[in-house]
Amino acid sequence: MTAARRANDLGIYVLPGRAPDPTVGLEEACAAEAAGIGAIYVSERLDVKDAAVLCGAIAARTTEVRIGTAVIHQGTRHPLTLASMASTMQLLSGGRFSLGLGRGLGALAPSLGVAPPTLASLEHLAATVRRLWAGERISEQGPAGSFRGLRFTDLPGDPTPPMLFGTVGPRGLALAGRAFDGVILHPFLTVDAVARSVAIVRDAAAVSGRDPGAIRVVATVVCAPELSAAREAIAVQARAISYLQVRGLGELLVAANGWDPDVLRAIREHPTLTGKGIADTALTRDRLVESAEVIPADWFAEGAAVGSIAQCVQRARAYRAAGADELLLHGVLAGEVAPFVAAWIATDPVDA
Image (cartoon, rainbow, N blue to C red):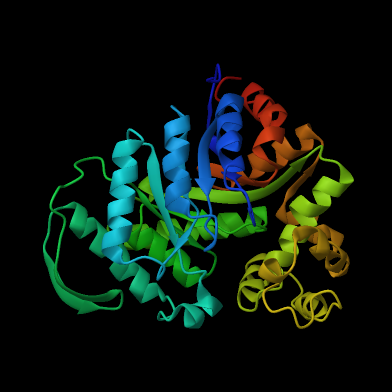
């Protein structure tokens, strides 16, 4: 089933968070396409949520929506494997795939026996993947690995998949502008923080001699349009805890938004979180809700789109006005998003 009109500037996550049954993601993808969403994104967890497998299955079940990873973490795949996966997906999907990369592996790197990802290794990785797609034979040592005669035998042709970088800090944003085709901004940024992020990305592109307007900016917006109180708590409050509780990431988000850093200490010292390590892997989302009581209410008002459908549409339009080319909806599920998409299309200023 295809939509009468498609919101090409809206994307949505399928299987957000922990997903013990990946087959649910296929039905969510079909529901999102039928609702008129323009793109479907898959995050990855290294258990029963392999992004490559899911993207391939989604490509087989859909016909129009773009499909992307948001994100695959560097270090979980060899550069040749990553380039092979992305080019195969691009051909399999009829040119609908985008490769979103990130370095959120962070604290898990030692347990995997891999080096922690760095901005330098991600820049080298992106260049290596592009050179493989171009048919180069690569023999060199660099931050992303040591290669001797690394190459593709069968080339994917054009267009190759766009590569996007998921990041939040200013150095990562600058890297996206100079070395990637786009950027995926982190959830829970304020509208002003998105505007500042867009400026950093586009300025870095210009300095590197690239067309700033050609770098696609995807702003991830946590959205809860007319959800029940219980669903909103899982979609918004618990999700905020899963990010802010992580050391390093919480500090980056607070700094980007100009929020009070003392709140992070209160979050991390909350009885439900102490001694839990990374809470999102140790606890289910419903158990994270209680600790969100220490987060000021204005953080949710400033960093998400919550309320009536009309209020959420208005808030989402503000993120587009801040310079985002596309909004990646997070929190609201594919089976819940149709009324929001319909309102978004009906109020599209292009057709007004």
